Image 1: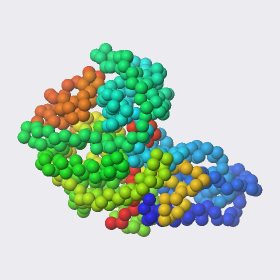
Image 2: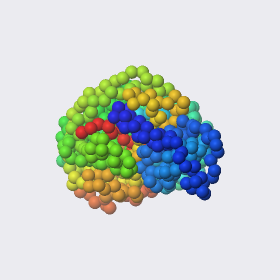
Image 3: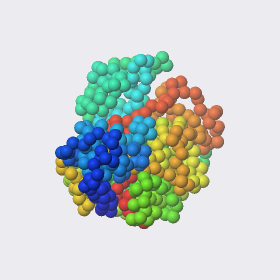
Image 4: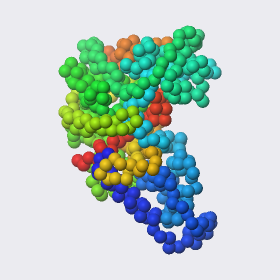
Length: 521
C-alpha cells in the first residue's frame, strides 16, 4: 500500500482513537438518562471490533446514514467500549452497521482472512475452471457453463461454453447448496446434461475433476473481422483485473495494451468490446481501457470520486481536488508487484515498466452487455459517454453499480504493510460514488441497451462465432441491417442470470487501487 494512504489512514485512526480515549467528564447516564447504566469496570473492546467500527466511522460512504457511526456519545471511551462489547460476533457488528444492507449497500463485505481479498483482486481462486450461472429447470436448478478458464481441469476435460451441469456428486442443485457444491469442494463429479427443444436432460456423461489454484487472465479472446469493407476488432474481456500473472510474466493491463497494439497495427475501423460477463474490478484499469479506446489525452477527465464528507474534506485539504479525479492516461504506470505464494507468504518483487498506452482514437464502439456487466464495466461506458463517440450497447441492461470500494486491513505501521497480528480480518468497504466528467452516475437500474438482444440457449455458440446472437447483432448494425430484421426471437432466452467466478461473495466489486489512489498529479 502506498505510504501516503497509510499515513493518512493512520492519522485519521489516531484522531478517532484520541477522541474515543478522552476521559469521561460527565457520566453517560447524566447526558442521556434513557441510556442503560454503565458498569464500573468496562473491559477494552476487542481488536476485531475496534478495527471494524473505526474503519466504518472513517471511510464508509454512507456513514451519515448510520446513526451509531456518528453518535457523539461514542467519543466517550467507556461508552465506546461498552457499546462494542455488546457484539460478540464481528460479523454482526459489521453488517448491522451497513446502510440498508442488501437493498442499498449490496457490496460491502467482511472477511475472516484478508489474504482471501488479495487473491480475489489478483483473480486467483481454487477452481475446476467453470464459470457457471444458475438456470431454472422445472422445479430444480442446473448450472449453465458460460465459459471455461483456459488451461483448467474443466478445459482439459472438454467442458465448454453452453454445457450443463445437472448434479454434483449425485446431488441435484438447489438454491441452498449451489455455492457449496460448485465452489467449495476440492474434487467433484459433474453429471452433465444437454439442451433439447423440450427441456434439459441428463446425458449420462460424467466428469470427475479436482480444482487447482488458477489465476484468470481476463483478456480472454481477440479477433479481427472484415465486414463490408470495415476492419472490426473484437475483444472478450472478463474482468478489470489489475494484477501480475507469474506464469505470463506480465500484468493484465500490459496484456490488454498488447491487444490494442495488434488492433492498431491492423488498422481497425470499429471495435466490439464483449463485457457480457465482466463483473468489474479496478477503476484504474477502466481508465487505461478508456484511453486505449478513445484517447490518451491526459487533460480529459474520465471519472471522479465522491467520498463521505470527512474524507472529501481531508483529501482535498491534503492533496488538492485533482486527487479525486481519474484522467485518461498516456502511460500505464510502472508498478512493483509483491508476488506471494498460496498462503500469502511473500516470494519476490517484480517491477513492470512504465509503458505508453496504444490508443485507437476510435469513434465507433459496440459494447456487449448483460445483467453481468457490472461496476467498472458500467464505469467505462458511463465515462466514455460525455465525449460524443458513437457508443452502442448491444444486449440487455447492465446491473447498476456506481460505487467503489477499498480493501481495508488493520495496519499498524505507516511505512510498511504490517498488520495487527492479533487477527486476520479484512473488509472490502464501499467508500465512494464514482461519476463521469459531467458529474453523472444515474444508472442505479442499469444501463439500457441501444440494441436489445438476448443470449439463446438453443444458439449458445462460442465467443467469436459470427452467428452468436449478440455478436451477430453488432456486426449486423455495422452492415446497416436493422436489428429488428436481423434478430431472431430466442427459443430459450437467457435473462437475468447472476453469475459468480469462483468467489461467491466477491463477484461484482469495483475497487480503487491504494497505490493509484494516492498518486498526486
